[in-house]
Image (cartoon, rainbow, N blue to C red; front, side, top):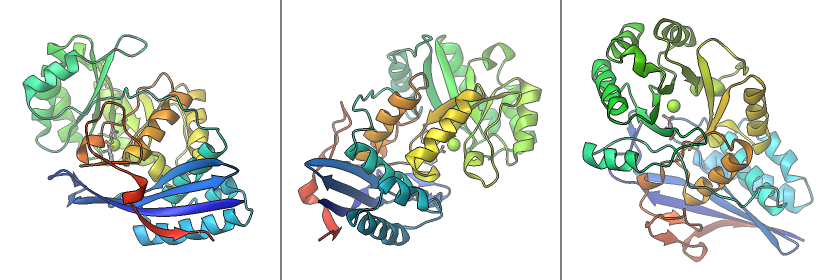
Length: 333
Ligand SMILES: O=C(O)CCC(=O)c1ccccc1C(=O)O
Ligand SMILES: [Mg+2]
């Protein structure tokens, strides 16, 4: 006997969360729960506006269709793989399936690369207290490309100079022209550059980003590129890592394949958030611990939300919404 329930959620965001020029007032998505033989498995399906091709209503249709097939005996792994055009659906259903089958280990580490923003004194205290990774490096992330690139360069230099164990991941989301990218690099002294673990997609094109890496000696990482058709994982001069955002990428199987390809090419694979609720984030933390134990994941997004859902992120003081407070939008018979 199999049973499935689909809950809809809408969580208010902190004021001022802006994604690709649009304000995100609420984070909307679905939680699915599966039940079979006294075992349960949960998953989160939450297309991200501005990033996912699918919207909430397409995701809901696909989830209900997929779950009715599963209830009638289909394999959920096969159902999830068939939704490769709807990555958020493929990811959420495959997570629920992996939990149900006991495949997704429970071990959860809340360690992730903190996003650097806000008051400098608080930031320095927070970074100073960060635990090191397995090489003793404190790893944090800075968004760049929002203001003048020269200012980004000065800011990054200041952080690296103040904290000698600090290693930074930067993320420009393809916003720099080659001239702006050069303006950034001019203000980061060569001896500091090796403590930039990588910068995600500095320029509009991959070619320009490769040139930036070659000219500056600053390593780069692919994020948006990983999700473009025709992308293949391969080692390249100056490339340190690929970023994997499972909600935007697809099934757990697809994510595992990318991770394996990255590791085989000598690249770091970094699991990262697409602003999932605490339920999805704790699953991403488990996946990261399981499949990329040496790479600190990029999951510091819970505080953008005003509540947690179903499962707590350890240590978070945000209030918790539980199952009985969520709206059921579909249930198998
Ligand atoms: O990667 C992280 O550390 C946090 C997640 C993050 O930055 C992000 C989250 C949602 C959409 C886009 C991005 C991004 O990489 O810019
Ligand atoms: Mg990015």
